[in-house]
Length: 438
Image 1 (tube, rainbow, N blue to C red):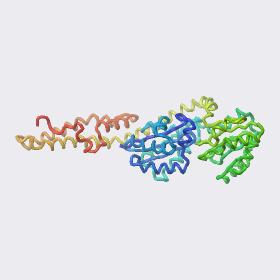
Image 2 (tube, rainbow, N blue to C red):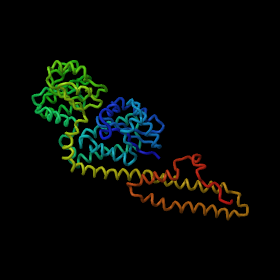
Image 3 (cartoon, rainbow, N blue to C red):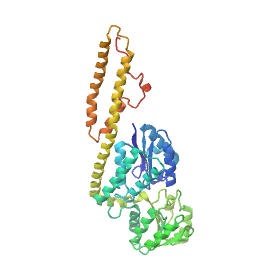
Image 4 (tube, rainbow, N blue to C red):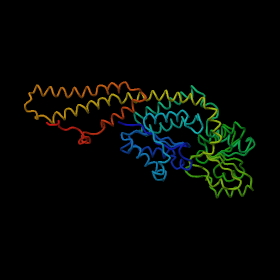
């Protein structure tokens, strides 16, 4: 029987140094999905990769093989040994995997509690997997339920009210470090979604941002017109760095854009004037060694934790209401999952018992030469009745199992009775082949 699995690394389990190695761009995520579903152990898959997490949500008949396939591909992408990566990996199954995804979509598992952007990231990941024909019945159901849960949380609670994005928290951090931003020379490195949120947050503080863009110059110009900023080309970036007070970096580049040697030259030209760098990109845009230069203050995404502590405390009441909604929705999903599996499991169990009865009868045919055909028929009838009555109570209990335990109990039963093994695999495993003394 197929299981839903989640394998992932997040800000809860790994520092940015590891997360950036595991992170997948959109193109890389597509390639990863294609490679993953080509594995015999994996039938469905969706990949989510953001600045805070890289997660593989998949379906496989053999959970261990499916997990190994995903871990091997992630390790290969990150360029590290599976044993090294496994220390930071969380692995969840079935309802636990679904609950985690529901919490992610609701913003309950984000670095910024109630983060609004994560639901869009989950939706885009699911749509990308759909387009590649990598999803199936189980992933379709769990992702649609997760998105519906996130929508409920946002409409029925105040968890997503106010500043709920990493860029807005990054701007708050810059204000704490440097003071009023209105008269500061601020650069935003990038023109994607994170850069848009950064520019919006800066505009609220009266900052006319200069946006540094390379590939997405048209989008940068749109942002600049919308928020009263300016766009500068990437070739102008070194000169802009010499004048800047603050740099907020959030590109999707797979490699650092600001290197320590280049920044050393810039700092020399600045004559000792301090520079604040806030890097919220994963992989990071600024080499970590830049923070060791005189006059440079560097924060990466993991350094936002102190700013976020008060943010989480203020939202805890709404978060509790959101958790209640998640539990309500997970109960619905668990009921659906249990209903999906109970009938096939009962059928398989009865077929297993019937097969054993018929094999034992066949193996002992002709060993009771003195018995009449009528007596032989009675023996067969009694054997079938015993098997039926033995299975009656388990069948009733399966049908009446609490919805939050149904899947787990079904899985245990299938393992105990080897319902997913072939007859050849079951032969010789302690099964009575002939009646004693016959």
